[in-house]
Image 1 (cartoon, helix red, strand yellow):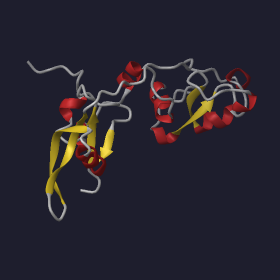
Image 2: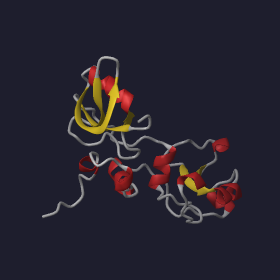
Image 3: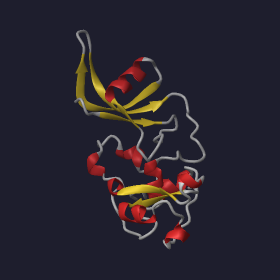
Length: 182
């Protein structure tokens, strides 16, 4: 029971985030329920017990107040990899996130900023080969020019959810864009 997580939905019953998925620990979900900040949507078939009560552990909760999401996605390592399709922007090698680094196109030592427009995914060999040079100086052209993605673009680049790793109560809220059976 200790590793159970609760899917957190906005007040419109959509996940707060798809990348990464908006999850709380079941203890945080209980706290929010008791503070009347969320509505219980679904529960696990597991109970948490105190000396005086026994309650089912929440699997899905919805915020009572709508949270307006930022227009542009957060500048995070995962979102950079997602934007770049989990591939090195110099050689095109596709790797899991653990096999990638991020590279400053204009090196920081030369005034390059850590921004969407100056950071790309790179495999370690390419990152080491490029070193403290620009792509032109290293004769390593970029496959795609780095730019700020939209939330929509990142959502559609998100790897397909593996429904086997999620509790069945989550599925109705993770597949808003999937085609309905007729």
